[in-house]
Length: 237
Image (tube, rainbow, N blue to C red):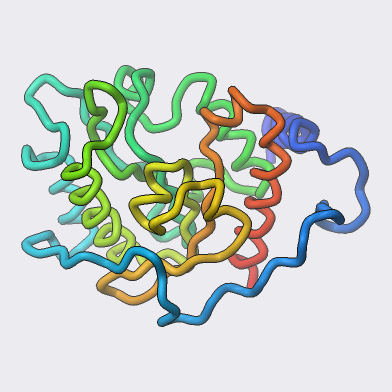
């Protein structure tokens, strides 16, 4: 890790409230003990919807996301922001839709939000090249929100996408993504493991606050740090 990356990770830990080293990994002593991830096949709130007529290979699906004009909020002049990173990394992260800055930059989680996201990744020993980052929608809606039909389509596509990637774990960031994949808002979903049903089987997932929320609510960084620790504990099993 470079000096700049190490400094960024230390700043994230400081923002998250970590002020003393008591073990190889910081822990929140006041946080209730977490349950182990549920076994594959456990029921969940939102069952997978059938994904008909979608490419059944990841590279073909990625190409379809880049070219299809049937995606939610698609229009000839709308900027399209596609997934990035390494799908073989074992860790997939999903946000809701591109922000205005992302549409200009051509990449998810850019600008100030992206700098905080990079510090979060550095804190768990990752960077953008060692995760796979995607969004429910490749396009931004006019008002930055999901309508019911769009949310349904995006949920189906996301489950298909996760099934093709088959990561060891998924980090779900934000209410829209959490509701689409878990049937719960972030506040109710975070702090424990869930299972996402896909055509390739169950995939374990953790929900947390998106970096944009943490910028507005710095007090939530400690909770987000706990979620990241939970994620890495599951990844390391």
